[in-house]
Image 1 (spheres, helix red, strand yellow):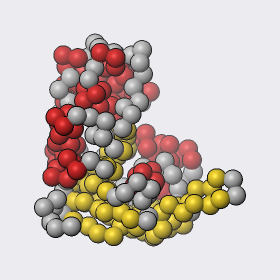
Image 2 (cartoon, rainbow, N blue to C red; image 1 turned 180 degrees about the vertical axis):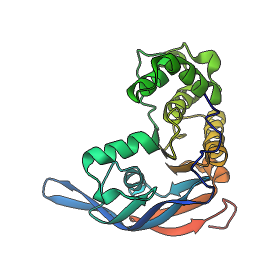
Image 3 (spheres, one colour; image 1 turned 45 degrees about the vertical axis):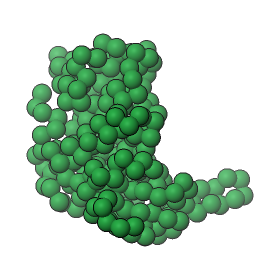
Length: 246
């Protein structure tokens, strides 16, 4: 299997891959309609690690859901990799996510009965990889995140940082052009948080992937290429360096 962190053949660093314009999204609970995104507008590019930061309830996770087609806006537009996600059927959206998107979550979402290798193999089997390639490809994915020696261990025997690296390997094994991470370091200690932040940046730079993470974690800021600050469902500021004054 080729180096998973090698630049994606069809990705051009700096290429505009995701374009969101005036996205509005609300959630209904009984008779109560709660607005979350109120005209969210942003661009995301290949080869960049972009952080979306803001207070709880500002719309970070909802925005991430729009980028990967997990949610639809009530109004506005979301274009990703040349496709209008708002015009796709549920089945077409599922196919888009399967082919192009990798997801990493705070809670890891690992199966307790499966080893690290089996977690990754399961994804490759679902994608229809040739049976003889599934194990070697899973091992290559784990090697890319530094877990070759831990491949036979189940989640209960792994540290928090190792679990998150398994989750990243599972997302990377299908070579997604878009990698979306929801609070990927908030459950980790300082060292593991720094390691995961550095790995996300490396994935963006070496693979040419569009990597977007929503976070409260200040440790990620120095690793980011761009920082988008969100408040009340809108981007209020864009920074290209964590060193810029607030």
